Image (cartoon, rainbow, N blue to C red; front, side, top):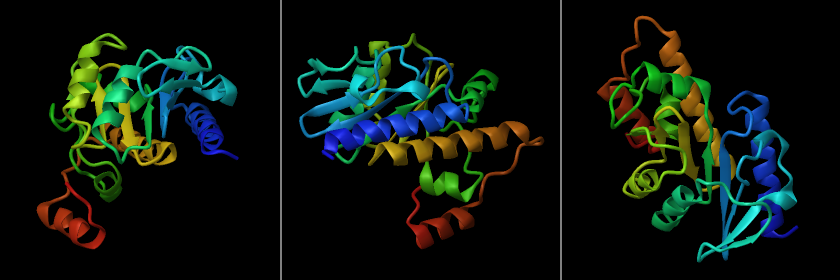
Length: 212
């Protein structure tokens, strides 16, 4: 199986898994992967739970639509991430319930939507800044993400959902799931839990190389 065929299958597998567990609904969300000669990205208005490998859009390095169905309208945002972070192999965007609810209720801080409350959040996700609301596909959002793409593993789009990137599509989805679970824990806990203290963060850094 070619690299491109394998990535098409991985996008479909991850999309189906996220959809089956309610991380995205209807035709919301999108997934992309880096190729040597461009990118693969889920089609516009596609349901992540019913993706067809052959229908996934292929886009050339110059932005031309090569094959498959029409690319997602968030392609510009994904390209900014890939262009500014050569280590990124996959980007995942969903409309995850608890993370969207967090932006409606009020995030912890604009530069960090959640405090460090679990070790795996620190190790697998890290800092996630908030991008103020703009319509889906807005160029202004892609421009803001461009300034952050090589500093964090993802961003939170207010009222829309997380965009997370990693070395592969699967790893991006794992980090997104950890982020959604952290938001769920935060919203379900009253009073709100205290963040991990400096000593705990230092131990995670020393033992696992976690950066916070």
